[in-house]
Image (cartoon, rainbow, N blue to C red; front, side):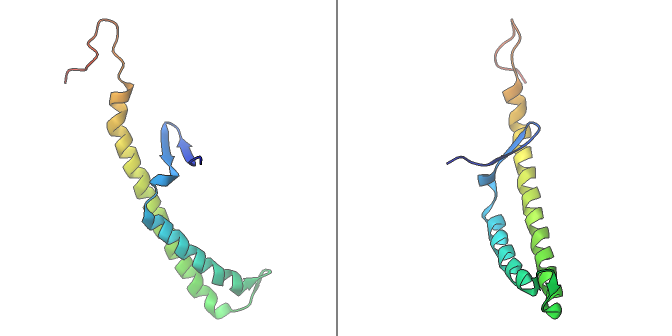
Length: 101
């Protein structure tokens, strides 16, 4: 099985790094999408009175999922910043292979 990976410049995020909370929110969002699709059929509103409640809940879940995604990416970037200077260090000819701090 191949993991899906997102590339953004030197940054790489494996989808398996997403926290369980994000997947829980995704499941909730799918459960909200089902009634929305029942309310709107072929472009026509069938139950107008329920649509606003469903859209508000969908928006809330979307914003929470986005927040979890951003936090996960920020944590991955912070880890990358800590590891990147060590990984990019290459001693020049005649230098010690271990940098002295």
